[in-house]
Every structure is written in C-alpha cells, then in structure tokens.
Amino acid sequence: MLLLLFPIAMGAGLAMQTAVNAKLRDFVLSPYLSSGFSFLMAWVFLLLLNLVTRQPLLISGTFITHNPSWLWLGGLFGAIALTGNVVLFQKIGSLQTTVLPIMGQIIMSILIDQFGLFQSPANPLTWAKGIGLVLIVSGVILSLGLFEPRDPLLKAAERHAATGSQLFYQLFAILAGMLMAMQTAINGYLGTTLHSPIRASFISFTIGVLSLVLVNLVTHAQFSNIRLALMQGPRYCWIWIGGIIGALYVLCSSWLVPLIGTGQVVVLALFGQLVFSALVENFGLFASQVNRMTRVKIIGLVVMFVGVLTVKFITF
Image 1 (cartoon, one colour):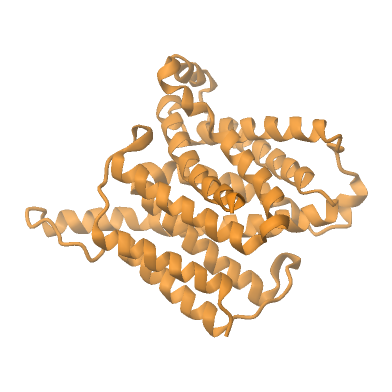
Image 2 (cartoon, one colour; image 1 turned 120 degrees about the vertical axis):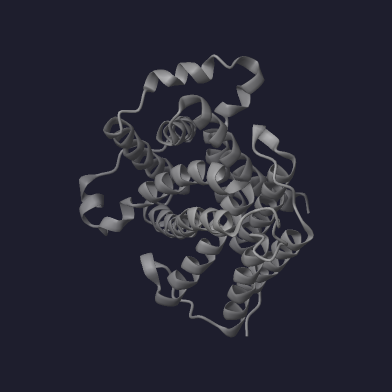
C-alpha cells in the first residue's frame, strides 16, 4: 500500500517541477536557459547514477547504425516539452499546463497503441478507450472554465482577444503532451535495446542537454543571468531543484513499474499531478499567480481522471 504513494508523489513532483522552472525563468529571463539548466541538473544526477551502477556511458557506432534514426528523438522531444511547459505555465496557468498535455499524452498513446508506432506492441482501439477519451476531452473542457459565468463588466472584444491569445498556447500544450508520449515510447524501446532504463535515460537527457545548449547559443541567451538567480539567496533556493525532480521521476518510474505495473504508475502519477497543479494554481504556490478553483473545474478534473481510468483499466 505504501508503494502506491510513490507514484502520487511523483506526479505532484512533475507539477512542482513546472512551477519551479517557471520561477527560475523569471530570474534568468529566458525559458531556454531555465529548461537547459533543469536538464543539466538532471543529466548530472543521471551521470552519477550511471557511474555508481558502473554502466558504460558511450554507445558503439554499430548500435547507432543498426537502429532506427527516431531512436534518438526522445531527448529532443523532452527538451521541447519541458521548455514549452515553462512558457505555458506563465501564459495559461498551472492547471491548463497540466490537463492539456495529459490529454495530448492520452491521444498520442492511443495512436501509438493502435498502429504499433516506435516498435510498440499493437493494441487496437476499443470501445472503452473511445469512451475514456470522450470523458477526458469533456473533463478538459470543464477544467478550462469554458462554462464558467463571464464577468459582465468585461467587454466582448476583450474576452475574444483573451480567448484568441490563449488558443495558440492551449494547442501547443496538447502538442507538448503528444511529444511526451512519443518520448516515453522511444525511451522505452531504447531501454529495451540497451537492456538498461537508467542508461537509456542518461542518453536521452544527454541529447536533450545538447539540444538546449544549441538553442541557447542560437538565441544568444545571456548565461550570465544565472548569476541573477544565484543572487536571490536562500529565499528562492528551491528554484534549482527542477532538474532533480525530473531525474527522480525517471528513476522512480524504472523502479516502480516492475513492482506495481505501468498502468498503476501512470494513473496514480496523473492523479498526483492533477491534484497538485490545482493546489499550485488555487493558492499561488511557488510564487505563481493565484487562480481560484471553482466547482466546475473540480468536476472537470474528476471527469478527466475517470476517463484516464477507463482508458487504462477497462476493456470491452
């Protein structure tokens, strides 16, 4: 029973990681620099883990040439999703930055199962998955507050402008979730071929770090801005833990899946992520903007979670 608390804590950690990285971005003035530093911290953690477990760090040229080219895209997809979450957190809030990528993950995971993408075993769409997907979409719509009563003092033109400006970020959030699902499938296959999930995670994060270093160089990011974050002192010491949280998620996943199964890990982690992201937004945790939860949004989260349970556990 105690093991079931770990995936919930892992999901809460993901929601925390997004808030932490978003605050770090406020100080370093660049989402690329913020996510790059977060990836670097996770990479160092996984490097030490590989050294402690005495696993080889390099891979052979034969391994590279004898495997599909998409095998190396996991780290890139992860870097895009993480950087996107830093931007999305400030544009659409903690809750939407959680629920929309989850919807994207579920949609992409169903597609991966349906067509056996990335060498995954084919698992065709069923009525249960279809119903679960409808519930997830319905829950997302409710949690977005689209059916909340509008402020009568807010002009129609202003409401339209606000909706239009958020639509791009909402669509990107769904895309980020789809990339995260593809990253999971790719890293899973990489771990299988290397016979080590820890080594696969290290390689994935290495590619992610290199990608973000290149992006920071191209965008002329001011690496000296890291000093601005360091100057914040003990009050904001928590802004540096985002990468460690991400690395711990990867590590705990590889430990828990053989013990309690992939389905339970995924569902309980999503539960923790949904609940904690709602708390972050409702109370403005980690110096974020306060956006109170409403009854409709809470109902939406419950409907969405029921949809996830339907997709993962019900078959007919």
